[in-house]
Amino acid sequence: MYYNGRMEFVVRAPGQPARLAILPGTFHPPTRAHLALARAGLAFADEVLFVLPGELPHKRYEWVGFKQRLEMLRAAAAGEPRFSIAATAGGLFAEIAREARAAYGDGVRLAFLCGRDAADRIVNWDYGRSGAIREMLDEFELLVAARGGEYDPPEELRRRIHPVPLPAGFDSVSATEVRRRIRSGEPWTHLVPPEIVPLVREFYGATLPRTS
Image 1: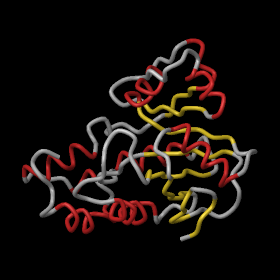
Image 2 (image 1 turned 120 degrees about the horizontal axis):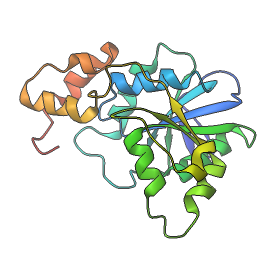
Image 3 (image 1 turned 180 degrees about the vertical axis):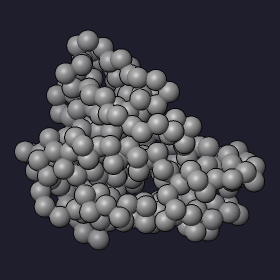
Image 4 (image 1 turned 45 degrees about the horizontal axis):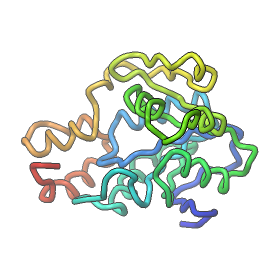
């Protein structure tokens, strides 16, 4: 593990990408949908960077901790040499983008991978001042997968928000659903990458509260 600015890399792909797609998340746990979105991002970028914030902007790490989630991410992403994994000090997109530029250089073109619901939150969030989202999208773009419907961005932002085709069958795949199934004793292994099934069993088997 090595450091570059405030971004701490667990795994870094070789070379210097001209285009970097960033997939931030809590990965509680990583799912097949996360990997499908990352693979789809490789059609738009030279490298995909999974980012786990050291501190979450709107929640805390509970039950399954930061290091355990990094371990699961590393196992899930091991088969793709263009995947990188890093921890960041910040959790907001603007903070992560600044850390990525410090690590990769000012010349890299940045885009964040997300689903339709996340894109809607990002675009409509109250940032406290008019025009903040337009300024943010001057620094990076959004690559948005259709989960639960296509995303229709505002006209003035369309040039910086792009659809990402995602294979069918991932709308109902989520970390929340994995945890729900573990709690209720329903089958769940088909929702996560096979490489992390033993880790999910170990980390979640006896620790997941009914309220998580």
